[in-house]
Amino acid sequence: MDDFIAARAQMALSLGFHIIFACVGMVMPFLMAFAHWKYLKTNNEVYKGLTKAWSKGVAILFATGAVSGTMLSFELGLLWPGFMKHAGPIFGMPFSLEGTAFFIEAIAIGFFLYGWEKFNKWFHWFCGFLVGLSGLASGILVVAANAWMNSPSGFDYIDGQYVNIDPIKAMFNDAWFPQALHMTVAAFCATGFAVAGVHAFLIMKKKNVEFHTKAFRIAAGFALIGAFGAPLSGDVAAKSVAERQPIKLAAMEAHFETEKGAPFILGGIPDEEKGEVKYAVKIPKVLSFLVSNDFNHEVKGLKDFPRDEWPPVAVVHYAFQIMIFFGVVMICIGGIYLYSFFFKKEWLNKNWLLKTFLIATPFGYIALEAGWTVTEVGRQPWIIYGIMRTADAVTPMPGIQYSFYFFTAIFVSLSLIIIFLLRRQIQMVPKLYDPTDAQFNDKNKKS
Image (cartoon, rainbow, N blue to C red):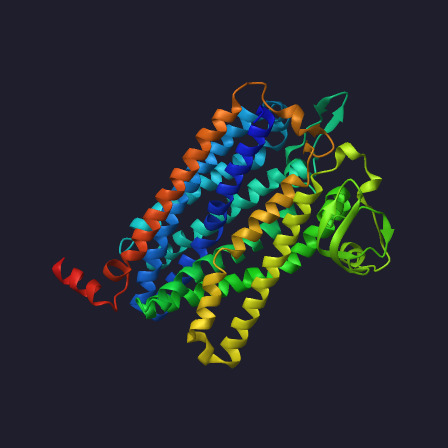
């Protein structure tokens, strides 16, 4: 493994790992706050226990996300010094603001965890809600920095120099809103389905059924918001990509020839040498309509761009197809759940519906990782689109492959620790969180 590939692999691993915790941090506190609100409104102790259980999970994943996020910030400087030398002064503002949001989140989660029976009940609830707001702000600010890499602005590039820097314009670049919107919706979808799937499994195990049923229905509601919002936010993002990065759009669709009334391609195996897609299903004129609301709009093909500026077409195309596939599956599951909720209440307790959510547990995160693959790989060979190539930004330091192996070991270890801690939290539900369980009452009597 050469140093350039090792640096890219390490960054991909770090981002792929961290993005899961970023999404949990953006969404899970809102589930927690909703359960807490239900408790305050109904005085049902099950909701209180659910809030406490989820808050401990939020704390565990917050701590892990802080570790992986800190590692990422160091990696940017260590692996890509050429990039940070020029980009740091331009897009440093969202990172600085993200640090502020992080500290607010840390303070709020501390208040929430230790504020039971100590604060005014609605101030205590607001602390939990603030954890979600600050987590959401952190995610959006980091996405703004990434969006700048796809749509660089806020400076003039003259004779190889970055001058007339405007950090505000850089932060609110043309790509930040479409990316932030789609990322936020995807986070709600992925986290909602993951949490719902875990609780569906525990319901099927006949363990603390009332507790997990309430948790499942809250999580499923959030999952549906994300699932049904994803096509709308995706449409906004796709139109933005078509305008700013037409070569990325062409790679997503493995669209080689410029044509009017371009078809939308489902599946297929791209052949970059021959410039064609084999075994694909083509829906006439739909791609043109999706990018411009005009069925006869001209869409540029890859052959209109220099060959050395093509991203890895197969990787981008397959990732895009994976994202679409799992997104459609989750929409279908959401539709079935809504139909059950309004018209077939008896289905809500059926094992087949719970199994459907159980199977779908990883679908949101698979789609999320695929979407980020499209975003990052589709920008290649540029680290700053149209300005700086990735190969020109990498560190000259040798031996990066050993750093890659070391960081891989750290992430694997963190994953195992998280699984252990979350599993233990689930096992403690009867004793610590579910007031309808005999073990909970026995423990309280003894204490």
